Image: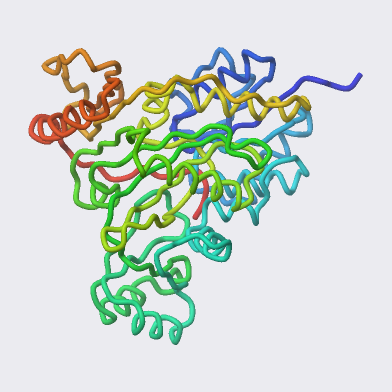
Length: 402
């Protein structure tokens, strides 16, 4: 008799997605987790996993595909889910090879490859900072003649602000490209646009944004990544121009790049020069840096659980219903800490609702019905965190090859 058990294969290079795994199990889908050897003993919700498969880091995609195909000889997977951005392309390749429904390689590039997402968004009529592929040197010379410096040299497939370099003059670019050698085509050159940066986190079902919420970063993530400092983000005033325009912009853009269903974390910049909103990047995942917790505190919506509900509804031919939500305001403050378990007990404002528990991190989430109160708290906490806790640490490696 054929096995009719519903199963998801979830791929994760970082420890995340616990609520996705739990939600799958709670509604009758058995999740298998594919992760790194070094994460084998992480605090995964092992009680809900059918199996945990751990692999060495540095395997190429063919080796990962062979492993999954071998496992599929005795276990039928209905969906392949990349819980982390680094695994998006690998999941897409497995789907196409095994003919499993979901985002394929070409569409996945629009949510992973910074050049692909910019090209597609620009061609669809959305504002993006002027950019150029790093491929043809005549194109690069023409670009640098037309677009004033500084520019940003960005890895096409790194997450967030990892690996970005600020370029002040053509001579600097040529030196960097010489150092990159054959890797240089994996980068793009983009106009540096000073401005305020926002992120919109949303749920997409059948090419329609069913839920979204807008937050604004304190310091730009690129600045925090490269110069160090404290990361903050807070809910935008729902009566503001930022909220209205970014909600509408995201509702058009997020599915226009090809997403049929899933979650999206998109970033936009309101330029200081002209006040217009430019698309920066988008990912087909739940936002990192405790953004999922922030969204849940400000709206009541758990993005991980909703993503699981969405995928299971599609598997079963059911109509996904948007989650119930409320409209509060929240903000988070987070930094790498010098001590393994930093003590935040000196912060005792009643608005504190979450104290983040992560090794060598200090972090809190506050909530208020007044967006201005949230802003005031984050500004004060940011200064105090920098003084009490702040440290720096190199980024972790990933499962999926570059």
